[in-house]
Image 1: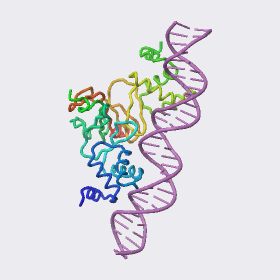
Image 2: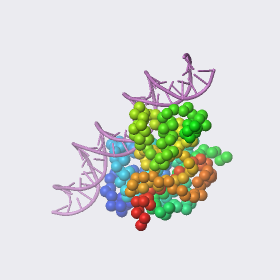
Image 3: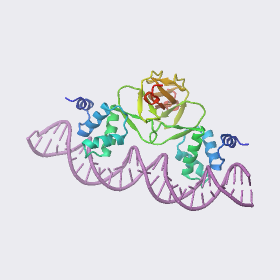
Image 4: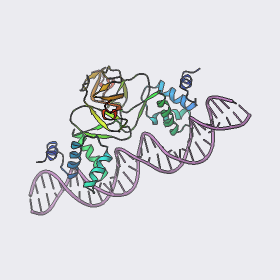
Length: 135
Length: 135
DNA sequence: CTTCAAATTGAAATGATTACAATTTGACAA
DNA sequence: TTGTCAAATTGTAATCATTTCAATTTGAAG
């Protein structure tokens, strides 16, 4: 049984071709694509795909913990199939979003000043290693 | 000379009534308002105010380092008159954004994995102290 | 007081996301 | 295998934050 089919079944989500494709795409392309990028890419193979379905599917997968939203850009959301909590770097030179594995004293749920923390989000803006040209 | 007038003059920004009001509002209301909230509030006193002016002014103030954008909500930006780098907590109960003063090993520019970091952004989602009811 | 670049304004455009109603489909049971 | 029905998909239209744009107004410098 295919990996992604198994994931959906285990989560008890109804299996559809669209969900399989979107899940597979996110899991094999860790480029933090936007909804539009996912749509454009998958539309090539499935011309009947609707953008609404992309949004709906993202929503379902998110509710079941299969993807995260990455907000490094205030005008559109990007998506990331969940692996582990990590941070992101938006490169101002190439525009890519790079995963940053960084140990953080509050990377998991913690108490700060009497508040309850459920989620920790961190991102950086800068220039990625490749664009720095190894200088 | 008024504080805010002085700030604008020091930055070499042309002084206008609208800029003074927006700057004053942000500096006296640390509630991380959205552009719309700023607009609605100031419109009460200045009925001729345009929302475009709010956006334009935010842009100018930002370019001169007088305000920061806070992206805890993916569908609208919020604004914060700059004091020092800090993080934010979006309370899922009351919807407010609370400042979180937390010491962070990478709060200032640092190198991580060969990339250059120019800005550090962090935010949390959870429930604020007041909504927890001091339990 | 004149002048002019820059700021303000309101209306219209843009672009991501959501709402909605009609159609299709997956899962389950007979 | 087939029938059924809730849930998923689709396309269109609406929504909402933000930007564009052209016309008007205004601050600052002379």
